[in-house]
Image (cartoon, rainbow, N blue to C red; front, side, top):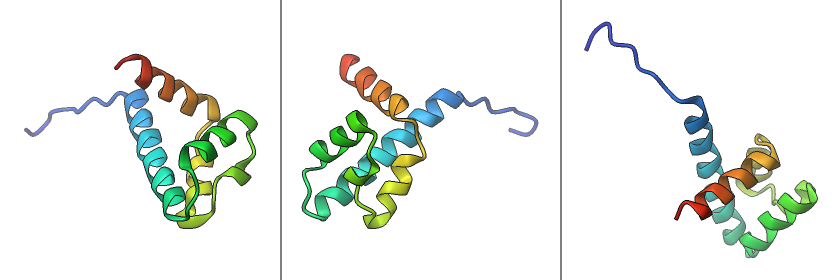
Length: 81
């Protein structure tokens, strides 16, 4: 429709971006032979980006988001199931 304004919930868009990023990082870590859960948890707890491989730009991707945002999304998704 012409003249129609689409409204987007910025929070939901960001959650979608974080979710997509986590899935991409998870798969990249798995491809490299790492235990992706342990690596991501290590990063979230310590803040040390060394836990995330540079493979496929994974480290750069995950560093685009604050660790607290990632943790909040994971907790929200877990508790809403």
